Every structure is written in structure tokens, then in C-alpha cells.
Length: 245
Figure 1 (cartoon, helix red, strand yellow):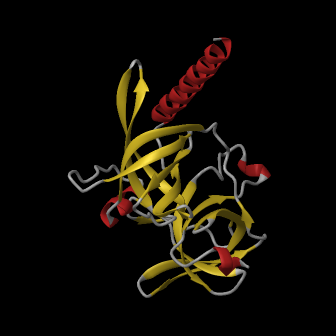
Figure 2 (figure 1 turned 180 degrees about the vertical axis):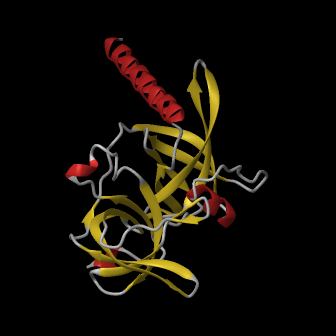
């Protein structure tokens, strides 16, 4: 069952399971990033040890974590316990034992606005991904070729777009698009995690992607949400005037 939905190389988010005595200290809030290294059985897997600013994070043996997997067919979640940590083939690993069943995971939903907005995208280079995932300050490489795509809906949490380029689920991509903000078009450049990429039945060679914004600045998120509400209000007014005429 587990290997049906999760594959080696899939990205993972881990968050310590909060205990009653952790609430006062804030334990369990930190999110760590890892990848699936090997699937040993249907209830034990190896994952890479999380890193932050090139430093290994030594999560405790017997610690229980809430794990979210970025699988090829969507997000999946389960609870798991660290039963060992070690080094193998120059890679630091955690051996995880599943303590709950794998289930489809739904994040907190934002209101989605249907639209048709032009967007430029590209895959991130490995050096960019390593820097971004280690939470280090970064500057994206300029001048790399971009692919054109079309946003078909957008929310404060992510967006859905169509492109002839297929981006791998779990990968990080750059996206650049314009939204109306303060009476003028403002350019937004964001990093997103690809949740799914599905080829359209009626348009071979065109892929529908769902992505989630990655480590988005709260100010930028609020601006996107404000744009969505303003557009929705404008659309409602248009429908009202059309029905009255």
C-alpha cells in the first residue's frame, strides 16, 4: 500500500508530534525537510537526515513525527517514529517506522479564483534547490530560459497552471507573473513545490500542474489574497449589472 503511492526521491516535510507538555515551549512547530531514500517494507523507510544551513539536524531516536509526502499523485500523510539513525554510502539517514496508516492529505484550503493569467516558469537548478531548502539566503540565477504557461486558478496557498513543459511532482520551480496591486500591474516572483502534473486527455502534450507556494513571504501572500478578493468582487458586480440590463 505504501509503495503504491510513495517513491524513492519523493520530498517530505516532518513536524514533531506535539505533546501536552510541549505547548508551553513551542515544541512541534518546526518543519524539517527530507527525501525518501529507500523503502524497506510497507512500514519502514529510510529518509535523508534534515539539514539547515549545511548543518545536520539530529532528530531524536524514538521521536514521533507527522510526515507529509509529496507523491506523484498528490500529498499523503502519516505518523512515524525514528527507530535508528546512521550513515550509509556517505549519506546520513533516519530509519522511520510508520505508526499510522498512510492517508490522502488536504492542507488548509484558500479560496481559489478562476483566471487566465500569463506566467513564466522554469525548474530550479540543483544549487538553487539546495540553498533554498537549507533556509539560507539566496539569489536566483538570472538569464536562464523560461517557459510560458497560463495560470487557470490562483489562491493564497498556490496555483494551477497549464504548460507544455512537464515539471516533476515534488520539485521546486520558479514562477513569475503579474497581478493588479494598488492600481498597477506588479510582478511577483515565487518559488513553488509541484504537487501534481497531469497530461490533459483532450490536449496531448499539455500538462495541468498544481503547485503550492514554498516559504512565501506573508506580505506577498496577503497581496495575492487581496487581489483575489478584489477580482471576485469585480466579477460579482459585472454579473449583477449584466442581470439588471
